Amino acid sequence: MEEVEEFKYEPKSVKEIFIEMKDTVELMVDLAYASLLFGDKEIAEEVLELEERIDLLNYQLMMHSVLAARNVKEAEQVITILQIANAIEDISNAAGDLAKMVLEGVELHPVIKETILEGEEIIGKIQVYPESVIVGKTLGELDLATNTGVWIIAVRRGKRWIFGPNENFKIRAGDVLIGRGTRTSIDHLKEIARGAIRVIGNERA
Image (cartoon, rainbow, N blue to C red):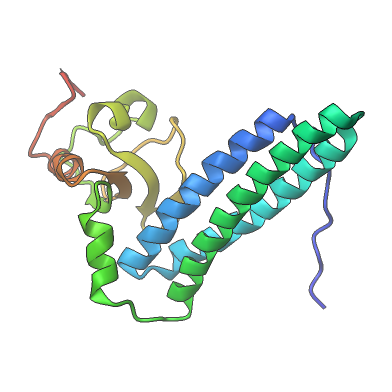
């Protein structure tokens, strides 16, 4: 019989939980689209793991709310918090449904992929070559979101995935970056990543 992980209360503030829920669900949506676009089951599995994290955070939020409400006015404020949290969980569940389609091998209509690729923002796959100026730099040093308009949501390193890499993550030659941005910004970063462009933003890397 599979052992069920026991819930442990984590002493976090409501604000901290909300921030983590918001950041997590944003990553989930991006990864869900990436899993659909590339037909990648590993990315889809990560989406489902993040969905479980959202469920846990929502439960923690309910516990905080029960402990915090001491009168009618505070109870009304708590209801608002829970409504927003439930809306976030709805988005999480929808992203999970997209991921399950990938895991179940559902064949997507070409229109769906075209829609993902033709939106104002798209998901792109960027190969990093040894000649690139971004090799050996951390995401914090490069500040790609500001300097190129691309947000890195995941990195494939060999057979391993790194999801939601932080500012201390150092890029290596051979990495495959999964980024979100406009088609122009994605194409620009691809040129930087293959070594054709030696400048990031207004300065050399």
